[in-house]
Structures are given as C-alpha cells and as structure tokens.
Length: 322
Image (tube, rainbow, N blue to C red; front, side, top):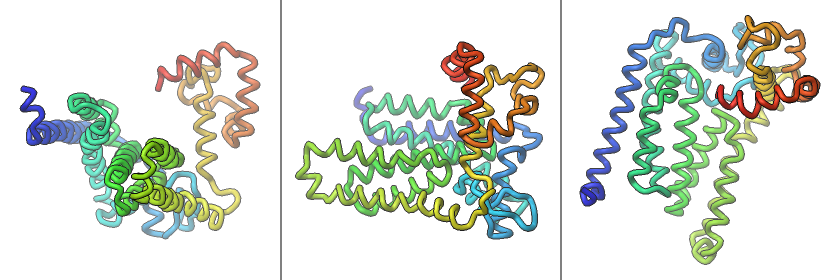
C-alpha cells in the first residue's frame, strides 16, 4: 500500500478525484440554490463599479450618469466584473462571474495541496486539501458576488508562485509572483504586508547558506520582486490622491464604518428588535463610523460604562460569531 501511495500516478489521480468532487459539489450547490435577490448590498456596489468602468470609464459606486470617482472599495474584483460585463453583457455577466468563482473555488484544492506539500507529508497535505474541498463556507460563498472566493484563489496562487520562484531561483517566476500579489492587493488591501513578510523570512532562511544566496542573485531578485509589487499599492494611492475629490468615499471610511457596526455587544444597541441593524437605532452611528478618531472616542466612552460586557464581547462572543 505504501508503495502505491508513493507512485506519482496515484497521487495525481487522488488529487484529480478530490478536485472533481469539489467541483461537482459547487456546481450542484449553485444549480440547486435559489437566490431571490442576488444583486443587493455589497454585491450591488461591485456590479455598479463594473458598469461604471465599462460604460463611463470611471471607478465609482454612484448609480448616476455623471458618477464621481471614489476608492470606497478596492478595484481588483470590480475589474473582473467589468470584464464579465464586457463579454456577457447585462444579461450574461452573472453566470460568467458565478461559474468562474466555482472553478476558482475548486482550484483551491490543488493550490492548498501544492503549498502544503512544501512542508507537510503527502497524506497531511491531501487531508488539508480535502477539508478545503468539503468546506461548507467555501462551497456557499462561491455563489455570491463577493470578493472572498477571488481573494482566496489569488492569495494561494501568488503564495504558490512565490514558493516556486524561491525554489527555482528564476527571475520570471518572481516577476509573475509580484504581478499575482499585486492583483491580490487590488482585491483586498489587507495583503499589503504579506510580500514583505515573505521576503524577510526568505532572507532569514537563506542567510546560513549565503554563498548560494549570492551566487543565484537571489537577494536582488527578492528586492526586485518587492519593487514590482509596490507599484500596485503605490499606483492605487497615487490615483486616489490625484483624481479623487476631497469628500470622496474611501476604503478607510468603509473600514471604520465596518468597525463601528461590530462594536455593539450582541449586535444590539438597546432594543433587541434591531439586532444586526443596531445602527438604525443608535443616534450616534453616523459620527461613530465617520472617522477612526470618532470611533475610538465613542467606543472608549461606552467601554468605560460597561467594561466587562465589552471585554466579554471582543474576547469571547465576537470570535464565536465569526
């Protein structure tokens, strides 16, 4: 049995089987699930962004004929939706987006295994890939127009490409890894520090074999990798500083607003009737989510009134909800 497991054909066949199961589950899920209003809330904003890119050449969430540019959401995912609208039109873009996400979500199985194979035994890497294939969250989220599936796919793809580049010491692989990480940043800006962390760990890992490190010019390649990646956040920041009006909605405003919505213990302000919609009841919510300074001041004043309640909320209850 051990000899069979070690055979290359067996491992490829097993991975293909797990990938096929993942793909089948996701296809069945989207075919059987009825979403009454698929384009609402966040999804609606992403679609509007896509439409404005195609029809007006403006990156904006305003549903008007003369939209004002903003940076409320990162542009990576709306760029994909714009591409889907370009090829599928208003009627055909939705299935393009959803089936692309189904494929990407299924490919997470192979990417997870590949990354895991660098530091795990075969059966552990396969077990991890199987968990990804069967994860209810990863199955269901692929049916919604949200960034999670895209972000997961490109995060693992860029990480895998970087690991291959580090192994092969090939300049072109570092080039592709930087591009993938750059696009991943444009999907979700929380990835900003990850390439720098990877490079820092790489320098630490290779310092014991400095001669080999120097012979392959690996240090220079890692620095060029970071420089190329940095063009993406720098370019996005430059665009926002040059082309946005002073009062344009920004990503930092969205982040603060999200933090304020999660700062209610039990997701209740006073009346349980407004659970999950507590911002409709709280008269200070507009100010609470307007800036990080206001958020910090109001949260601190409320924390002082009920410290134990807020400590319990943030340490125990909120992680449970997550």
